[in-house]
Length: 213
Image (cartoon, rainbow, N blue to C red):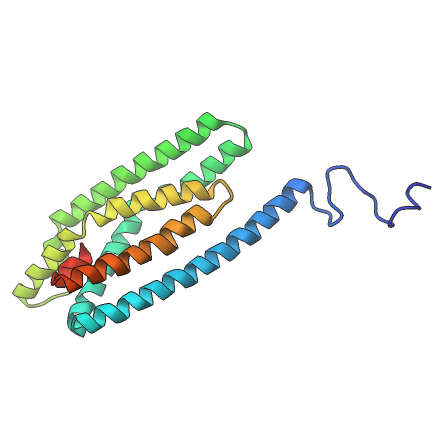
C-alpha cells in the first residue's frame, strides 16, 4: 500500500529519482558547471588575445608582429614537449588518490608531477638555448635576421619551464572537480597580463624583444 500511495516510482536507497546516485548527480552537476566556466574562460581568453593582437599590430609593423608570432609558435610547441604529459598524469593520479581517501597520495602525485615537469621543461629549454642557431635557419635566410631570431628564441627560453609549472599546477586543481582556479589563471589572468605587460613594453620602445620577454 505504501508503494501504491507513492508516485509510482521505487525509491531505491542511494539513488535519485533520475536513476543517478547522489554522488553521480553531483559529478554531473560539477561537470556541467566546469564545462560552462571553461567555455566562458575560452571566450575571455580569445577576446583578450584579439585585443592584444590589434594593439600590437598598430604599434609594430606587420612584419615585426609576424616574427613575434613565429617565436610564439616555436615556444608553444616546445612548451608542450616540456610538459612531457605530467599535467595529465597529475589529474589521473590525484583524482585516484582522492577517491581512495589518501591525502599523502595526493601530495605525492602533485609533487612528482611538478618535479617531473620542471626537469623535463628545463631540459627542453636548455636544448633550445644550445640549438637555437640551427632552428633559426628554418625561419630566416638572411644571416642578420637569423641572429635576431636566435636572440629572441633564447630570450623566450625561460617561458618553457614557467609555462610547464603553471600548466601542471592548473591541472592539479582540476583533479578536485573544479575549473574556476584553472580558468582564472590560464584564461583570464594570463591574457590580461599579456595585454598590459606586452603593450606596456611596446610603448616603452622594446619592440619584439619586449613582447617576447
